[in-house]
Image (cartoon, rainbow, N blue to C red; front, side, top):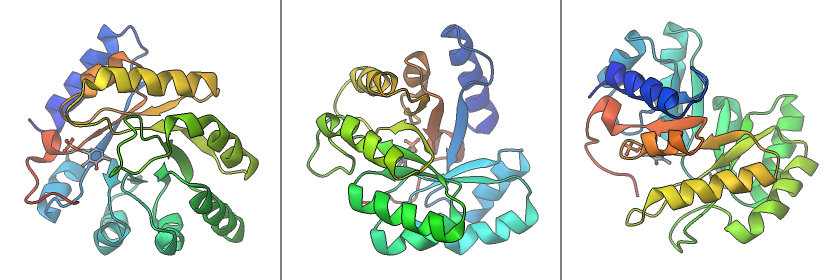
Length: 219
Ligand SMILES: *Cc1c(COP(=O)(O)O)cnc(C)c1O
């Protein structure tokens, strides 16, 4: 696979969906990948990356950021409240806002800092017990709450259940965003980003198809 193939496929899917060229952002998910693979993708010109863990990101991105200008970092893994300060300092975008307490904490830290990362609300579209995200039926109220707190809300994010047709989940997320007046839709991974683009994704999160298989999976 590799970066250039994925860029070609993102562009083709965007065109096929009759959407404006460049309307889909490609987030290269570098979690767990060895630094030399990340470096190769940086050398190839990619600047938007996703990491799952604050700790892992803090360990390597400051060095890359000294060497490459214009990097944008998205947090796409669950965020514990006690790591929120570090996350606000490191990440340009936090995609995994999923509970009121975290929203309050992020708003307070952003006020202190005079600057806030953009946020996406993660929706647990499959209502899976083991998965993070706000439940679909609680999403509209949570959107209002996040806006009330003054956080820059960019849109919604989801990770569909592995054993289900992702299209139904992407459609649900798109409808929830639309009725809440939100334009950002972070959905689609290596296996299904083209489907997500057809359903309106503005951000796709692609890891293994760019970097190769991960040596292990985060749980
Ligand atoms: C790991 C991960 C991805 C990328 O998964 P691939 O299947 O490797 O593309 C995307 N989004 C989230 C939230 C992830 O945790």
